[in-house]
Length: 495
Ligand code: GLN
Image 1 (spheres, rainbow, N blue to C red):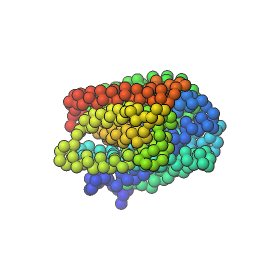
Image 2 (image 1 turned 90 degrees about the vertical axis):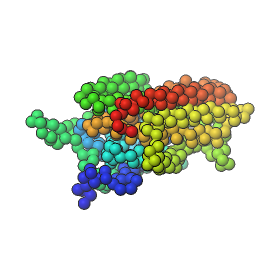
Image 3 (image 1 turned 135 degrees about the horizontal axis):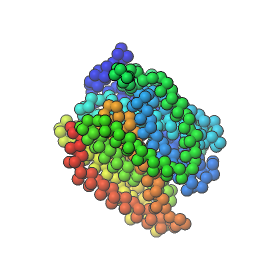
Image 4 (image 1 turned 45 degrees about the horizontal axis):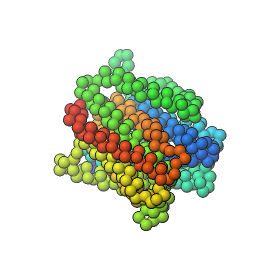
């Protein structure tokens, strides 16, 4: 029965969420378990097992993250043109499992080899599952943002569990086992997808091509196999680029302009109305780079701040400040994403829901307020430069609302503003912005860093940096809201 579901059947679901959303929710949850589990182990593995210096490990880590998100553009492109979303996701999942198995087998000697598989795998998996969520909704369905909010909770449940479990297992038992766990969990993600994909009807199937005679034909199989082989063939290149971080700079300087040229070329083939919407999408993408550059301090400068300048007391509980730094945000997202989702539905029924641009603007204002709170931790410090974990966690609480006003909504708006044939590419562009964000975050964090400083001096240096970020975030928020009439025009009827 599910086999014969039409797009119309799927998109005319009753209730708050389509049931297919739950299936994608679980696949993505386990994928993020694997991804964030790995992410949480990288720097520690590099410094304690590969005996890299801290600054080298940090750069290496930044390069990996930037590459992961940069490859989502390529994954989205191949999904749109050749593989379709489902095959891309499947191939990505397989590569992630292989990567995790390689690391489980011999993490010390095969580190960059294994990591390169997971980089490419994530590129094929991550953007395409998000695009499929968008396909569950009709273009004017106001329940879409709430759906993405729920999906975003799944992301963070995976992130929280994986981020905690993998490093804990690595440190208490063995690194092999921890990487092995990532492989098993990724397998669960893939199996979930394989067994539930029938319910997606025609969503995500292979795209068709127009033959010389002008007929729609299935994509040729050799082209598909060429993508599989090509993605394996670039592994040595990726290994080389990730292991030498100076190549990351060249890569980041090239990939952005190239993708823009490509998008402009595609836009030249679109109608005027479609083009305007794509311009609006690019504006959102640009602002999201700024957002992630600030937000991603969490993996860099905020982790160092937590390590050196915080007490261990959270609302009377004794906790490790680094643990709080790694997990508070995910926990707040899990709790508040559904609540915010319900609030958006409630507001939209009463026709008072802020539009996407205003939500983006609010996202920046929350971001600014959060960094102002990180800055104000300096007023709670003792004479030795140790300050309040409570205030620090409050800042994470505030930043979470910023993230929820921007990140799930950004996913949703990409699926609304893209033409059908550019869905994957635009989602890839959205994540490419995260790659730039990660890259710039590292540079901003490095600027705040102090050598041989006392804790008191570190406190002053870091919180000064956070005050600057607070001011810039607030300015960005005001700019977004100020240009909202212009963006609204570009977006046509899309809200
Ligand atoms: N935390 C979200 C995720 O993992 C968003 C990441 C991002 O776009 N930078 O999907």
